[in-house]
Length: 290
Picture (tube, rainbow, N blue to C red):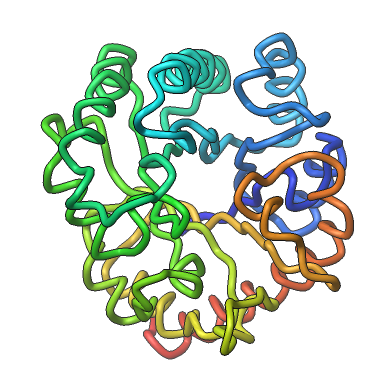
């Protein structure tokens, strides 16, 4: 397994993100927002990003696009997001990355009630990815139709060109899944063998809602999850998506992360979480004998 961090979980300044990655001996970084700009608006700085990462010996683990965090019935938003995807594909290729995270539209109904329409819209993105030689990674995200691991499997099983689409497994997102899926083992069993990338965060369920906590202190059961990755031979990235801050982030920033407000205290929080994650990985290796 390799390690990376999502850029804006540390800073909007690329050099601070690179410094963080070097400090914790990471293998790469995941591009979300930088300089208060989303990934589809970073093409003019792709050369700068590439030079900084090459100098540091770092790779781009994934382009964390916001594509299809949108209204499934809005044709205008659909066209806007296809354009975003095209620019994210261009950015990824300039940075020698073939993985692009996407979503399945804002959840208004259960997946099966909108599945046909979602697949119809999604097919254009799949065709685009296939023609460009990149891989779309659908994330389980509770604010979207694919709200947990079971729904991720349901969706991927229905996609017409599975060779161009895989999953991002985010067990931390199950903490606020409206259907109450347990991240491990239930969610993991559903997505086993279907994902190419993993996001790392942790949280706890409350009587009303949820809150994020440092990695290893919540309900994900990261130790057992990492042990399962090791036993199953997962060789992709664990990419830190901290979300926790000393003061909880407002829901609107969690649903649409990015920018200075989101990154505030991010480096401090991500340092704590990365240290905890490394200890979990070390313990998991000892217990599995890896």
